[in-house]
Image (cartoon, rainbow, N blue to C red):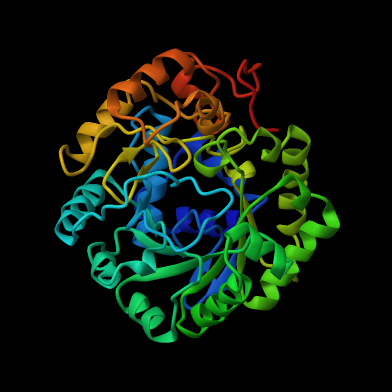
Length: 408
């Protein structure tokens, strides 16, 4: 089933308008290339969205409507519950960060503030989140106003703690899988046996009734059709109901590795696969950040609809944008967001991480707030193109030439 059908039904049955006019039609057009699958008593059409129906999805759509009118609120949140990890992944964006964990009491305060600000989808990540002995208590800091996901390498997941996560409020579990070839996946993750751990984690997630999905950081050699479709097939056989394709950004372990990034031709192929797989029932759902962040979709909402808080409390626009605008130990999330909004005013048609990545100085990350603001003033254009969903905010059509380069 196409996701647009579900959202049309939701709008029709809503007692009050969830989306109006132009915003509704733009969103429905985007969802025409997104398929939905049933899971329990819900439907899932993209792990970046809460399931349908849910209070969290209604909150997210309210945030989309507000953003179209220039009122941004952080709806999609990623929180590293720890920066610690047992692996040395090729693309790690958290490399070089402080490994001091935030106390549980801080999580409780931060969760309350995020929910008050409008958080609708929260993913707990790392590092490796399963290294926290109190991970279930951290999960309980959130409620049904948001949909909760946990992202893991698979190492350390058991049926017992998976069921504990489910009971603590987790809806979906994302497992990292960067290749259909076991040896290559293990090499990219820096540890033997990780392919088997990932497959086992997907099986455990299904048994624990957690929505199982795969997260893949795409290298250029993954894009050829035969290789790409083989990854989807392998993920599906392992039990994944969705494969999320992420684009590498030159930060963390990827700093300076421009040859590992995707070219415009690669992004074009990913958009073709997105359209094709949305019409196929024999493969898992396919969700690409290329399509999500395209001019036809939501664009890059770093620092706006999306924020990232790392394991030591640094508040950043995105996990791929290692610029801190404050630490939760010292400032409120609201204060850091206000500081961000001096430079992040409306979504982009290009990944901000790709724009800023080459200019981030060497040394400890993320950069401190004063350096972060200097980088933004120097390298982020004030008047930039805006994706179609939000073009009325900026008055700039999404297809106008973008000096920085955008998604296909």
